[in-house]
Image (cartoon, rainbow, N blue to C red; front, side, top):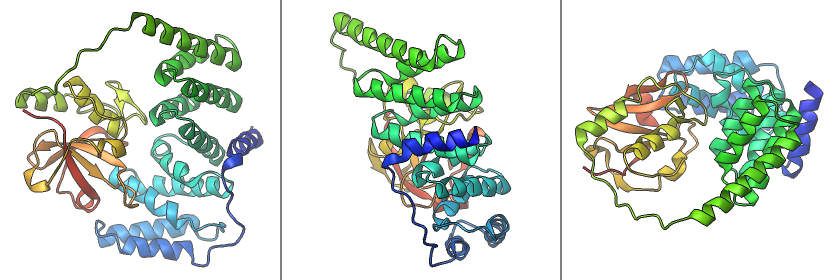
Length: 353
C-alpha cells in the first residue's frame, strides 16, 4: 500500500519540478533559529522551545532542501491555532519527508492544518498535496478539494478511488458544472457503494449536466439585491451564535467551518455575499484602520509568517476577535494578543448599519 501511494503521487506530479540532490549550503536548523529569533511575536521562552523542538526532531536527518522554509510556517501556524508544539514538530517532519519525495511544497505546508488533528503519513501527504495542486490548476475550488481529502481519509478511500474521483471533479470543472454538487453526489455514492469509482464519476458528471440543462430551461432573471442595512445588536448576536462551532478543514456549514468558511457563512446569513477564501475576502469591501474598527469588520492575518493573507476573523468590538481555530473551533481571542498583532495585515469593512 505504501509503495502504491508513492507511485500514484509520482504519476500526479509529472508536471512538478523535482528538488535537486545538492544539499543546502546553510544548515536549515540554523536558518530556522535565525527566523525564530527575529519573530517579534514570540517570547524568549517560546523561541527557546521552538528551537529545542526543531533540533530534537530534525537533528541527524539529512534533506536535500532547506526545510526551514516549511518548518517555520508550520510552527507559526500551530502557534496561531494554539496547537501543541510537539505535535507541530511531528507534522513538520512528516511534511519534510513528503517534500523530499517530491511533494509540492506550498500544498504540503497547507495540509499541516489538517494534519494537526488527523494523523497523515508522508505518503498520504504526497498524494493529497499533489492532487490539490493539480485540481487547483484545473479550476476545482480549494474547499471542495479539501472536502474530498477529508472524506478520503475518514472513510479510508483507496488511492485509486481518491485519484479517480478527483480526476472526475477536474472534468466537471472543465465542463463548467457545479463542483460542490458533483462532489456531494460522488461522496454519497462512494459511501453507499453505488458502483466502481469510474461508474460513480460517470454518473456524477451526467447528473451535473442534467442539472445545468434543467436550470437553463427554467432560469429567470435574478432580482438585483442591494446591500442590506443590519441591526447592530442582531448582527452581533448572529456572530456570537457561531461560538463553539467545530473547526472543519474546508468546512462551510453550521456543522463545521474553517476560518474563511466561518466569515463567509456569517456574511451570507446576514445578506452579504463574499468570496470563499481569505485571500480573496481581503480584496472586497473598504480598508479600515485599526483605530476605527467596527463590529463585523474582517481582520486578516499572516499566520505562516510568509507575508501574505492566510487567515481571517471578525471583529466583535471591545478588542475581541472571533475566528475559527483548528484546535478550538470558533472562539474568542483578544485582538491585542501579542502574536495576533504581530501577524496582523489589515482590516476590511463589508457591512453597514
